[in-house]
Length: 113
Image (cartoon, rainbow, N blue to C red; front, side, top):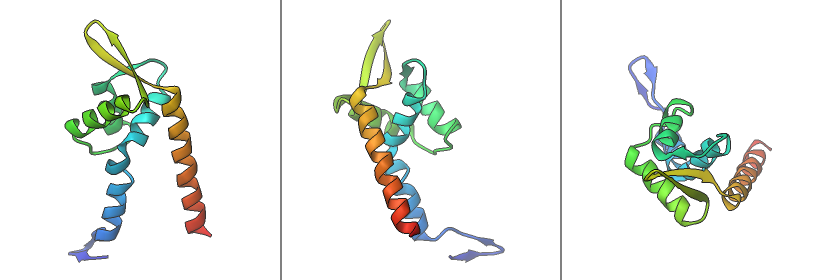
């Protein structure tokens, strides 16, 4: 780790890993927010949850792009209400989310062994 004064800074390798398992797979976090919601959410509600509940520092445009791509891939269902789009996790989105979590669990087990 690099040292800056009395405080230790995160290494570039760890910072890269942190980015790769947050921003670069933001769809996982979006899926989690929608999976635990009892009703469809507006995109800005998803973004608010990502920031406030999960502590992710994600730009608005990045989050909107991810939501748009997820809906295009069939991972989200889009519900139009009064000119607004609401989003909920589709069955396919839930399946892909569960597969991704299983993959991550397998990787963690391998690294801890």
